Length: 373
Picture 1 (tube, rainbow, N blue to C red):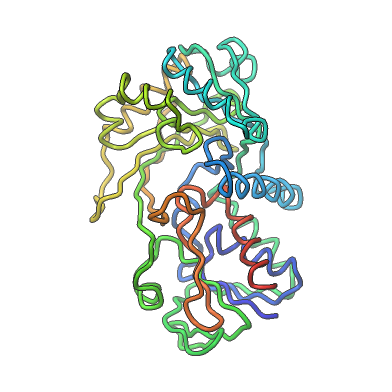
Picture 2 (tube, rainbow, N blue to C red):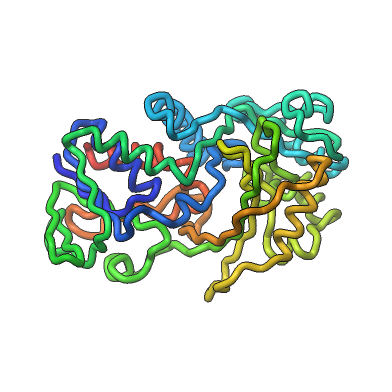
């Protein structure tokens, strides 16, 4: 079988990976020299802890297994089974963590409620103020800026894989056939469009009623911390944004302890991961209304700095990068991804939202299974 994959972000690259692994010939086409979208502009978290029960959690857990397997073969991914700590500061927040522990799938996530001292034993860099922490053993991390490059380097070792950068696919010209902006036609048994947040142009022509929206975020990265941050770290605002934490206790938190004005205005949570060079990736915000701003604003960064310094008990290292990113999310956020046959032999896979980095290996595996690769 010959598979044409359009898009070189993490979802597209994982589709190419599974196709090559199953013995097929793959041509992967990317309009940039390399992907530059949300696949690079994220935390690199393999984030199991907050996923909704059922299909979403099953997908994340399967993806976590696949990331670990692929990471053992491609060390440059930087796969690390580091887990996460969601830090709580008062009784209302603690009650949300306790409600999560009562979930029937809590053991599958590796949940455990730790005292502050126990959390500091797991992550000694957390010398600041908090009262307890929800530990999730199944969370992990990879290096987002280099993961696609490392996967591609491994793929290029196969004679069945071809990468064509700097080409934008413009038309579907037949069953399993597309034409790029160089005028070249690429024909296969299947075309999979993994175009990320690019929802206009050809995508709009093929799927004009696409139930997917775009979401913008802001993040930052610091100089090296100077010591290990041994887990991912989140604050209790993350309880408000992840479906696993929905409960009466969360309703009470929202009613009795609203977010700060800045966090509420920018729909914020703290997520923090240490990079391989020792720097910290910190975020994030959520913007849903179009048109998106073209610039970044400082108030969210000030808020994140205050929260992080409160947990670390020390000043944050110098911020060396700030950026905005845009990802595609299913309007029905309970759906893991939108997968649709848009023409004969042509499928569109988009809309994983903030789950793209986490779930991409399992999303691609399911596409391969459904298409009979």
